[in-house]
Length: 414
Image 1 (cartoon, one colour):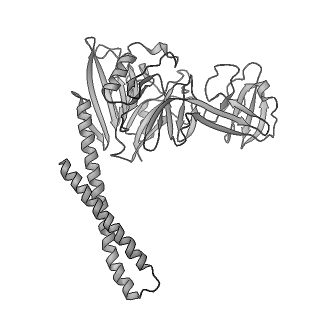
Image 2 (image 1 turned 45 degrees about the horizontal axis):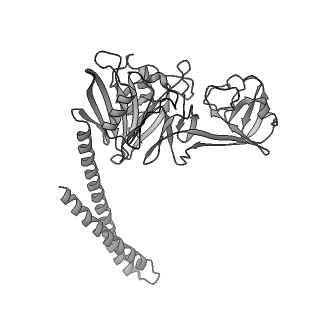
Image 3 (image 1 turned 90 degrees about the horizontal axis):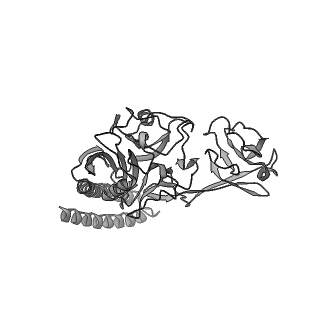
């Protein structure tokens, strides 16, 4: 069968090359002003069937390519998820149920693998519980609101408020900045990347450049300069001791105070040490420069977690560096990763019950490697771990339906 496909592709490529050459030659001749009307009609009648033939040939060639990719995807999944129950969710999406045994005790695992080559219409994006950061909602509601086929819990978040903790970018807009430079997944048009992300941002005036330490995150040090956008809420967080705040609307400073300020809809509030803001006054024109390190210029979305699980195909768990020592025990887990051919892998692990005892980070890393991940990271776990597929919760979170979440990573059709 593979030989037939290969020979067929060679035939189509040769045919299309010939057709293209003929079309170009005829069109060049056809455009000449010296042609008589009768000749033009004759050439038009000749070109139209050739063009139609080329379209048909290309369609057949594309179908052959998709058939090959589908066969490859099916075989790969069967090989990597042995003894798993495999179901098709949508073209290019497979759901796999597995039970593994660790130290004589069972662990129930759900995996979703996504092949965007087979289905370019799949849209993968983080989604907030609402249009503000300080809110939470169940994953079913988040998914249904966005017509999602798949949804999985996303970043760590502050339980009291729902504000995501760590880098979150949606549609090229940074919602929240990094904490401890934790690892994140970058989602591009046709690939994925992981890296520990840093913020590279500044407020620029005519005289100086003031470093912005974070965006829409809880204050960790009084010396930090924080930016609050309308996503944070109506008002900025309290001013630090010996601090000051400035409100900026349409690139112009509109207010300065030692107290919290109203956040302009077309602007933001900068809050930090008064000494660093002392030269600014109402009416000054300012602008911001906000990027990340690494400089993922073409990235569409970023979702953070931590720690690393797999880096360049090898187990790599940097718990200490990412300041996450409290999550190292055996727990329910959520992880994301991608294969060398850029299939996205979403994983939930049930835990804290007799039927499924959960995984340690090392066990999770070993599992992600066993199913072929080239890079993988841990996401928020414990009570947050939940997987939604087409209207149903597929795993068994401690709270039925899963707890209220700050955000989710979703898959939908464009």
